[in-house]
Amino acid sequence: MSGLLHSVRIPLLVLLYQGLVVVANVGFKRSAESTTATAFLAWQVLGNLAGFLSVLTYTALLRWLPIRVAVGLTMGLGFASVQVFTAWLIFHEPIGWSKWLGTALVVLGITLIAGGR
Image (cartoon, rainbow, N blue to C red; front, side):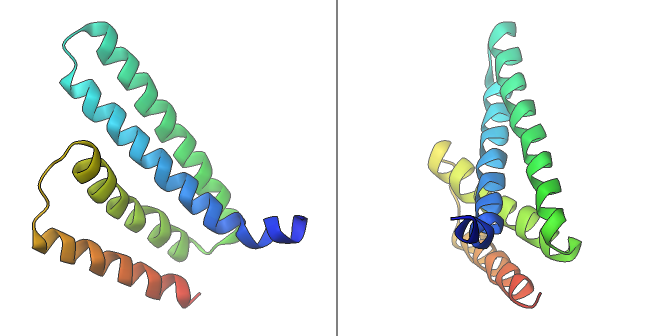
């Protein structure tokens, strides 16, 4: 079991990071749209907590990955996650073909960077 955990820890940490970045951005967007101080603060707390946990996750990734790979996996895929999941799926913001193409190129570039480690 520990061998399996060892082989999937980096993908799991990357997925956890992506989820936390999405939650943080949802929290901040909802906070910006809040009409009461209580809702504003509640969404801020959620966004900041998720952001803090994403930094801890990133730090854990740095334990096993070179920084050039960790940055590509977290920041680049974080952009794609926020673009697709937060903006498009959750907030139903329009994403034109050029943004889809750009997102696909970011993911392709990250794949090339991560594959060359």
